[in-house]
Length: 128
Image 1 (cartoon, one colour):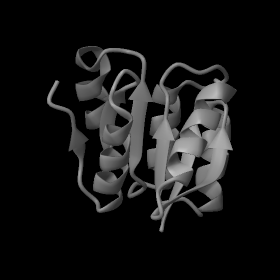
Image 2 (cartoon, rainbow, N blue to C red):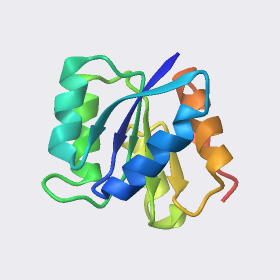
Image 3 (cartoon, rainbow, N blue to C red):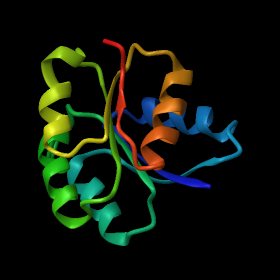
Image 4 (cartoon, rainbow, N blue to C red):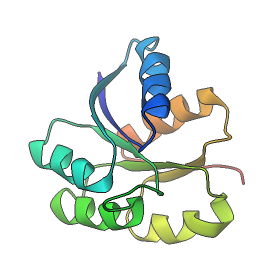
């Protein structure tokens, strides 16, 4: 079972992802957060296998949260799911420790593939 934390400031996005993941027998949402500070708190509890996180959030954005998360749990896979185009952020965030980057316009099945890939310790890079 892959334990997932969803970090996004939009409750509707979190609810949709939680519902979508509930149809997968190997995925379980165990935590949710609406900002980067809450994401760091989740990491400190240590019960997550993959963190799925947006970039643009209040009270500690995803970029700042990524640095704080990697300082506390360097091996935790963090998969960025953002509305920003890949060419603007993907390379920089991957260098800063993200395990993958997906645009929110991607196919939902791609999110599942990406989670499973990063949970195995690999990086996920889209064709774009």
